[in-house]
Length: 404
Ligand SMILES: Cc1cc2nc3c(=O)[nH]c(=O)nc-3n(C[C@H](O)[C@H](O)[C@H](O)COP(=O)(O)O)c2cc1C
Image 1 (tube, rainbow, N blue to C red):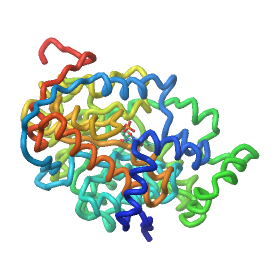
Image 2: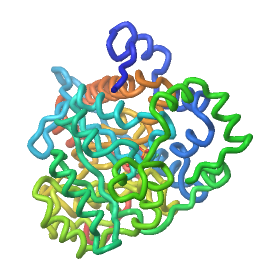
Image 3: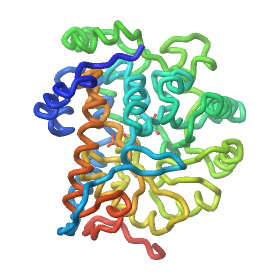
């Protein structure tokens, strides 16, 4: 059952949250205090020295927009993508094991995305299954796909079959997970499967009562999509399938096979090089998702927004370009639109909301984004998402490539 917080229903509750938590950073601070350290760090942390996380955020902050004034009219945030009109150019990025931040996270995200008409992308290693999410969010459900080379990709193709049968609108193979990611915070916290039960982890759980109650209600999180391929329907068995059977970046040949199989919109996530974008478009993808996985895999990666203009230039108007990694509010969305992105996603903003406020978290994060996108559009003189694409931008960190 999907819970709904009082703030999701009542206008007064929403107003109270706007006053208490006016920014994503307020939600992050609150989540840090409310969630066991291993859960908060799993979501908040990144690869190696975590420079890429800061690089993503700093790169957005360095982008200046030149306002046009004397414009009449209201801002309309609606945007059409793959034949469907969404409420705003912001969606929930796929997050595996988001239940560590708040047990039951996926179902809460999906329910709110459906209610607000924004995309929700279920991750392959999410803690809810394709079939469960399709039932909760039939109109806005996208599915993210990892690679399972074992047995000639039998699991990969079965996941694709299930996503198709369940009615997922968009398939999103992720290509930026080429190797294992080293996340020092997780190593220090012992955040792994099987989960270590020791005095330190027990202390964290006992001192996070709201989180613990939520865990008791939802049960131990499992990698739900992998139950059919696991020896047992439990955390260890499903995680073992993920560890032993998956890995690596989908190759171009494999992507071609997937493209031929999947007849609905097909978006490649994790593109950072314009030549990869070019090749993907030539292969027949329907969209490019520029991302460095929020700095969780490769600490040396450029900020995704810094390679966005070159990728937009390479792709032209052939397919829409989307972006995530470092978006922390409506202004960043408008910055990305001004640089040619058609749509934006964020993972951590939604996760922080849940960790801070439980069921009221996702509604509040959507509320913040909708309000801020409208406000910032008015500030730059854009009444529509298309007009936001014409704003003049100064982007000191942009990468330049010879051809683009
Ligand atoms: C806890 C967590 C788990 C993630 N798991 C996945 C995943 O399973 N598949 C995937 O494609 N991306 C995954 N991502 C990356 C997100 O989809 C997205 O690219 C990233 O969160 C964007 O950066 P932001 O958090 O700064 O908004 C994950 C991100 C987080 C924070």
